[in-house]
Image (cartoon, rainbow, N blue to C red):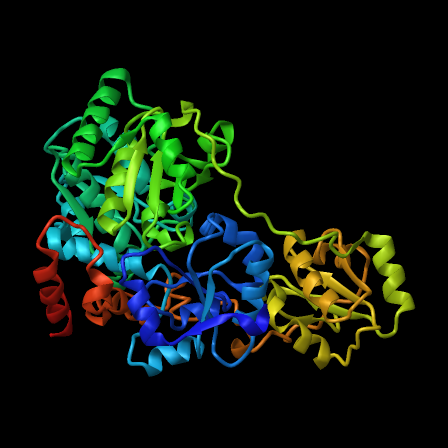
Length: 548
């Protein structure tokens, strides 16, 4: 299978991306490599987690798939072989990988979630979402002017840092939770995030719903706030999480229903949704867009949890197939229509599941990873014995590089699955030597074990509790000051990575990157957006504006 995998060049891939047929373009490099430059429509699917994630991102085995790597190794080829073993029948490789895409004159985009963040900039450009600066907000507060300040990010992000006084209310919850706080229809609402996208999408969500209150996006979010010299708040526990009373809930449902009609989106019966899901010729996703707590309590078997705000903010984390269909649901009739409207504007054929969580739809079984028996598991005592009795023991740390840098086993080597054999070679390890894998997830260790088994390594183990088992066994830790060099940390994206840690230069670079995304795009990378406007004329205008 490996030698028979079909390849295409960059120009053919560009044509495929625009031929109107569905396509999954997967970057099988590690996250840091992906973030340093990838095609606009590429979806990250690192080889380290390939079999664990592909069934969620591409649930249909007959989907047209293109894989690429850095062009210098065999990672994409190995990934293609793994997908074939899972039953994927239409897998192609991009000849030359990401460098070949750039050599053909096409843009490699830095950063993550590029389509969603470009979309946010596009929405602001087309719909002229009102905004105000950090200093303007400070002046309003000093003047005693009333306003409601909302943080549209996740609760975890809100706790880490927020604008002082803000209420945490993720964008996907705004339509349901916020109206109860708006006693006066003339009180302005200000939505903020850490940068730009979720401020824009959150504010425009409320405007699209037709709330009477003035709504504004806080320009540049928390980064703009501290760049203007203002202090952030840490550890906030203020959340807008109350369920509205019956009259407010009905009013919210009515607003969402009007939004659904405005975009002409279907509300599918159980039978209609089942037809979509059972269609063997087109990929359909089913997402529960409620909170994690609600999803845990009760959902539809086989549905994927994708909090509404994050589904729009990071669409490429959830939807792997360009040209697919998406069904979203809730249990209140308020949130799902909002998310469906944004997915439609992003370019997906979207719908709401009319019966919500009570629907009886059956989700087809997704491809499941076959990791075999996995390596033998060692407890504390077994690990200590193996360590004491094996002079040639090789220890490979498969955790995130950030965790490795915080502390690791003496004599261990850090690696990811695609570089595992090179890591063992650096230790002088041969297939007859014992190998211990330290991993945060048993499944990640099992995938690595499978590769080692095929390479002839028969004595492979993993610890029951990862690195903690090593510590519990009383075995030596590496001395402080032995971190990995940045070039080796291919799982970590260094691009403006410390923008939220007080590095003002990184924050400015990030904001410049975000506001410059449209200017980097070609017409075919923007034409799928369906934001109400003449997008053909607007795309050229937007790119000219950003390039000026």
